[in-house]
Image (cartoon, rainbow, N blue to C red; front, side, top):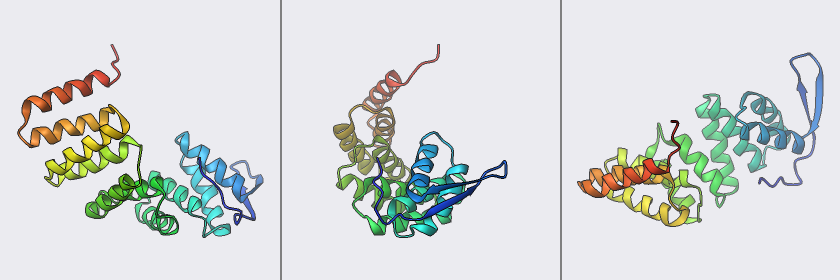
Length: 195
C-alpha cells in the first residue's frame, strides 16, 4: 500500500474521451492510477500521473508510479529518470529499488544488479527481485552468484517457481546436472497445468 504525503495538494483535471472534464485531488488521481496499474491499465494511469507529477513533483510515490506506467508504455528513458528520482527521495523503499533495477536490465545490467542487491539487503520479500537478479547473473556467466541469490530467495520467499527455475539454470551452468534436473522438476511441479 502506498502512503501519500500531505504535500500532494492541488487538483488534476482529466479530459475524458467523451469531451467532459473530471477534477480529482492529486491524492485521488494517484490512488486511481495505482489501481489502474494493478489491473494492468497503463495508458489511463499515465494520463493521470503526468498531471499529478506537476502538482506533487517531490512525492516519490508519484514518481514511482509514473515510472511504472511509462515502462509499460515503452517510455524506458523517462521511466528510468522518474524511478531514479523516486529512489533518490526514498532509497530504503524496496519497491522503488526493484522497479529501477528492472528498468535498467536491458541497457545497464550492472546497475540493475546493484539496485536488486540493495532491495535484498533491505529485506525484499518479493520472489521477482531474487529471480531477476539471478537471471542477470546467469546471463553474465556468474552462475555461482546466481545460485547464491536463488538460495537466499528461496530461504526468504519459499518455493517460488521463478526462483527455482533460475536455480536449476545456475546449477546446470555449474555442471551440477542432477541437482539442476531435480530443481527444474520441482519448478514444473509448482507451475499450473492446463490439461
